[in-house]
Image (tube, rainbow, N blue to C red; front, side, top):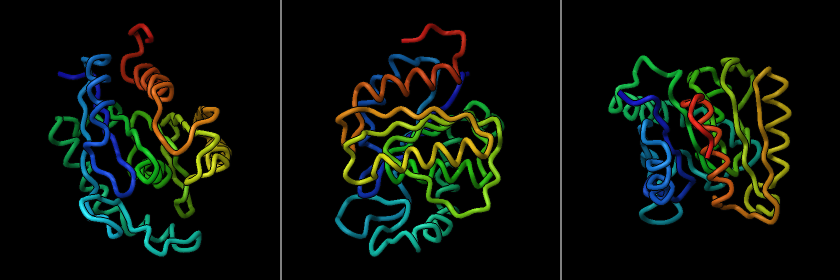
Length: 207
């Protein structure tokens, strides 16, 4: 039986396969952990072949939150399918969500909505855009990773998320990467790996 499950949540317009290089490396580094990298449930409405958790067509600061709420049912179904397939239905305390961009938005929503009291969250290049009130499970640690040269999700979003999540009583680590844009770097991946390892395999040596 695996010691934990990591579910990767891709960005808008991408697919679960985008995490393939990271999956290959993490499977080697974390052989006791199971992994899933599902496609988002909806077709990307701005280009063919991509997927999305919610539409960004015409998205604004005003309507983004309602789109997140509307996306929850399909998002929850996607997580449930991954968790059931891996045999973790009654082991949410051994599940970590790792999101990038829109995937991070949904991962953070999963926690602050109180719907998913998982073992931890890694949010690359994301933002906390969920509507209040927030009812998170207090034990969920969160690791925010963001480049300070991100032209898509301004780095200030990481600081705002850290402030709000900390105020809610959550344990938050915010890692700002210098001269990094809207991308997942090797350095960020290693730091995220160490975070996941600490949660799921606390007695293992850090890489």
